[in-house]
Length: 330
Image (cartoon, helix red, strand yellow):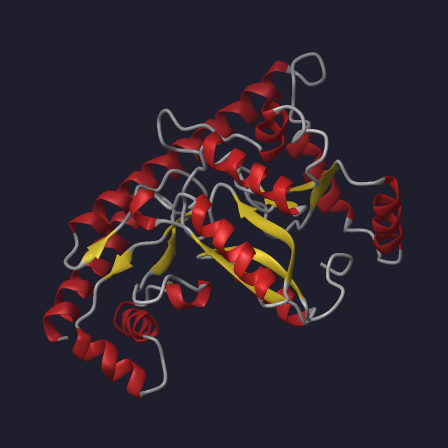
């Protein structure tokens, strides 16, 4: 962001809903967030026409779109993007000379049968020329997510593709003025990109790693399925299938009376709903308004990290009971 943004006439395209890190960085760098809305009724897919309209409208206003953020699998939405959507973004970026920032930190968290994580680099490569050798791309990954999920061992990497040598030299210079990441975090990243393999480690070590990895994945998948089915059975709540990442982003439908009441207090309706939830049940969620969302819609984000699954079932029973009583009272 420091290298990309020149002044307040620059902007970055971000998916809505988006992870708030991006809007915060844009504010810090005095740039403009350019929203492109994901389509909830199409499992949070990309609307190519809407993306194109946002770019053209931004340019008419004198704002230069410098980059586009793509979060796949999605946070907070939990979708896994199709190759077609990824390639439409690549084509759009080629037309408008826009850099792609591919946030792929949940790439191992894909639960839906038949779904597969496709990296932006693969999607771009398979398009062939003139796209594959000209569209600028920076891909991100992190040990803090995925199957390792080591949030206490912060570490990650990014890979550049099609950047000029001059740009990469300046990027290296900028990073060189910072201290390096902690040693344990670097070790964790090494284990993420180079897990135990036969021939390098003992069979017992490899088997233990694979068993732990499989158990974590199986549990996360089961909880994602449980979240989806539970929300779709709740009153005035709907949820697209949680295909990946670590979150559900269910939509809550409120009465106009409650919406007006919340706005009269200067807050969003989903914020009041989530506050009532935590005060009455102890269950902490994040209101959808914290991630931005399509006007007139309301959501909350919840994680599937609660463990074991029996505890998740208990939590969801409390949440369902809360929602039933809350909806009856509002």
